[in-house]
Image: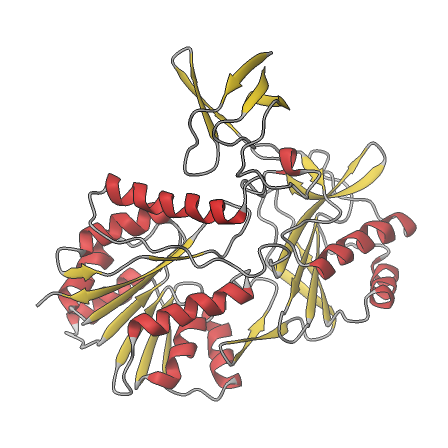
Length: 438
């Protein structure tokens, strides 16, 4: 055992210890704290805190040290936001990008904000456990009341555990490939309060299903739909390709920015409804669209941004590679009576290169790419098309700043506005306006 003082914290909330020409990252510590640590197979682990930083917050979750789903719960919320701002500033310095980073827009509800909960089921010492994998392992941490997940969804997971015991339905064992229930996914709409429950099993065979569903509906009459998903593959991917609707329509509806959206088992949808509206409000504010504008919405998902913009522009070209998402986007447009959005199922890079070939005229482009950011050919295509404005929405500070550096040859980079969508974790969304140079 070793007593140390934490003299450095990285921008992801980990204490840094340099020893024996190695760098160790220590979770759940703050600058200036004295701690007793011991070496484990995973690195140094805090055995005891000898002093507390004034930035330390009360950790509400008893599984915080083992779960790994959150990284910053031990830190005051204002300090969490400052840490996330420093992440972006560090990337600007790394890529030598001159840009102003604004204070993050924090959440009024930094707990129980996730509208989607996804739990893995296992049996441990004769008991059914459900939770998240311990960081860097396949060990399931049993969680009964996750502090960032929806409260009702937490209750539904606990009910399912109890009903599995009552009806003698075993959890899946991924090593032996035996048992029934692998995962349970719960999605709950903030606005409509509709609830979708997806039960994942390794095959069509689901003994006890009818009894479980009957009792689940009795315990939670507010459940809108229950779906049985079959995932036969030996994989960490939760959902398989085949789904069967047991009750309801197989989807729920949510309302975002005044528009209705259909949410199915595989639908990608932002997990924090409160802050999504804040983020999309920033997109609208930065874009300042005109009724005559033609806008490209790239990496469009189920069309949330494009449909939100449809009231303010002449036309939206919405491109998304996932065909299921495009089908959902078309349904969402029909649901809202929107006719000025054109949906295309294609790779965003291929689509924008086709627009270059056509010498298309765009007034603006909105991009919301995955963590990997924009393909270099996509960046070059923007610089050829030269729309007056580009709004970049990003969930990864490094790839955002990397792409902004490339685009800064042609565009003036506006202030980067972080929006905290993922309180208690080190993740941060960002929104920035790029304006064409004269």
